[in-house]
Image (cartoon, rainbow, N blue to C red):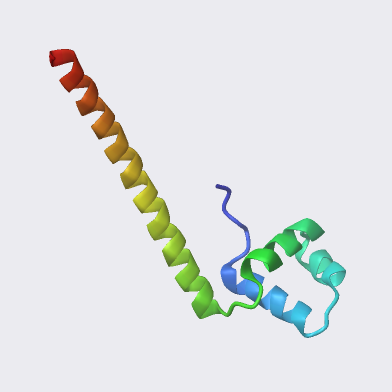
Length: 88
């Protein structure tokens, strides 16, 4: 996944300025981003503060690690199953 050139606090600040009445077009022009990027941020981070965003990042990281562990276990299981079937 491509790393954003904006920090989470910058994204939250942009969304908060939009909530306070600033036009999305103006924010996009100031930050040199596409309008779709702004609305993707709004969809993902809308209504969050920095504490909630930090917790979301931690949970996403933990979820990624758990998925990797699951893939490794499935691979090990399939390998062992193959070995047992060959010996019988």
